[in-house]
Image (cartoon, rainbow, N blue to C red; front, side, top):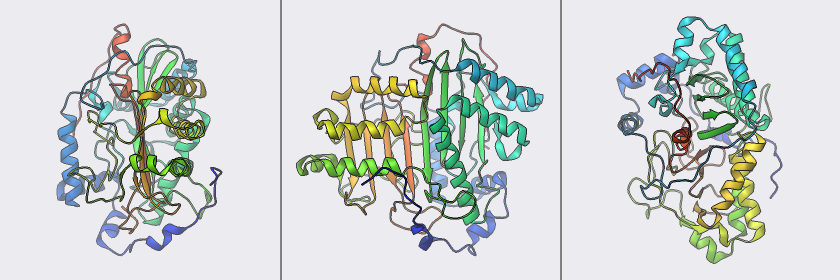
Length: 428
């Protein structure tokens, strides 16, 4: 197998939905707010509304962080200079502010400790409308927001985000609902006062792309984030040839196939993607095999699978190749330092797998250590009609365990700073 980009296959097209159904005829007539309101009032589909209610319950829990056993490990994270171009990033935010009126400035601004950091979600429903939505603002403001992203992320990470947005637009075209899903159907908000000396950050979230960025001086935390695609390719139109997440997929199957059979058996926690051996709650209709999606900020995720420290040198190259892809949103120096930190905990780093591992098999995998947790999952259809997981619908995510998400583990190490006015969430 090669990790080079392959041409789109168009395999997903045999699963295109009937757009004459009530779901799509209704959806195409609604904007994002009408669509979300109908969902909240009519509670259809019921399973997703039940998940939404569960998310609200999880949101009420005080933040602790993802752990393996419910106990936060201390002294894992430090304040250090990663060479982040913070002056350039702050300048781009100041350029944005110059374009905003007073109402827009209030809408986009949140307290650094606001719990609304945690209200991101990856479905197409606008469940919490915070900040500014890019498809509802003037083009210069939208471009200024994207410049903040571009100046913060690595060039390759920014391009990955742009590709996810374009694929979301392509899906909106496929199901004739561009007012709900388009290239700019994403919300942006700022936490704290953008500064070269104070902690602050931003969030950017919508369907299949959610980024949470914490910044302190020359250091950046990109966690948690979620990136997905259905389908994960564009095979027609202006952006034909666009694909994402195929490298993570290829490196994952290469790694699993490289393991000796006895190690494969230990790594494979479940043989089937929907396995009768799975305990209640191990899989659900929305997150499917993912454990650490939206609102799962305090989840206990026991280690599973096999230790990476027991792998051969060649297999470790594949592991760190996967991690490199998952850290792609970080600028290069930050990414290198994060890889260096992960290597320190290699003896506590686990690789686990669900599903088959022939070339054609859909699969799930997780790499988990005290300082990083990543998940990859092939999903069944949400807009497409495939009832079984297929390789053209992919969800990926990254968490920083032990209170590392949203920069929380770093905050006690930072001297107190002047606060801004907090805002509070409105679910209805």
